Length: 440
Image 1: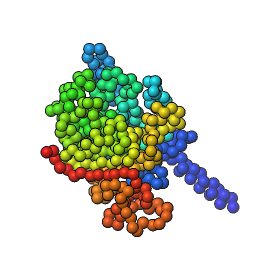
Image 2: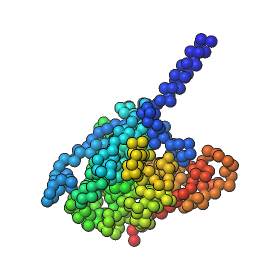
Image 3: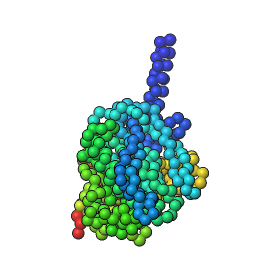
Image 4: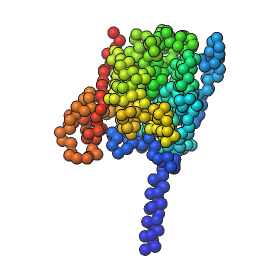
């Protein structure tokens, strides 16, 4: 009996240790990178534990639109980085500490639970490189749901902190800050990360620079599409205090990232007031497959303006995921307790209609299929992307089990319910595909 008791105690201890592996910080709830049980198939975590590391890049001699009276000051531009990567072994998770600007311009601090663990050894191999760009006034931590999940699937995700001015400040200089710097910063971080990967330096030795993807939300979406090859409208010079003038129109290629395989734009800024961001050719000049995600009630960037990015003729495949009734805050983590006390703070995070534990896993599912297909070259992912009914509600699955069944749709021809979704869960969305057509 004593041996049995000892064996049972050991088993319980082992299970307790396993339960804490790759878990978020104690008392913080579960990490948003870990999908709930009703999430679509590809939202689930990959086979790798997740590590996280902080670093920084410094680019000397950069124009800063927030400084200088007659012209922007020239300064060394420092960009803190949050890097998620596939780890060789699991840790105990982490708690991210960050802040977003409040209505009065002062930061509101909060914690977010994470499943990544600092200082974990890197898994063997080389993994595709992803640059993840946050929106105006955001921080990398609020996109941890995506960075951590992708790292678990074998991607090295580099998320710069752009350090925008408070979004409540309405001056021309404050507005020029993110407009001017976002594409320049993304272009620099991408090139610098690729260079360090080529030289096998530090954490970047795990990244494969020849397989690079860009993901951006809101202002970051504008940035990644520009760095992807969309030529800037000369009128952007005025909005950027002249900083973007040298990169407009015919010189847009100077910002284009090398070795780019795919772009994901989440609720991307598509115009600034009455000034078009890009020339007439616009994102039709982007030569790589592009996935665009938007809510049809997005009053910040405008659903129709974003949809026009999808419908423009382009030399590469385009996909558009639209959430019915959703607004702009589709890509941020769920609001933590500290950000639920005032409407302004909560509105950063939460949608008026959609639960975040639906919005984020659905995006993760389709982003995973898209990146695995076009960055890793896994053609089996086509079944999750192509041949789907445009309106998710129109899908039919005649042989689906009756009742509450956690079974994923196999997709066509057996089912027109979107592949990888559970019965009754593919609702309230549309997913459209346009093959490469070229610019006419």
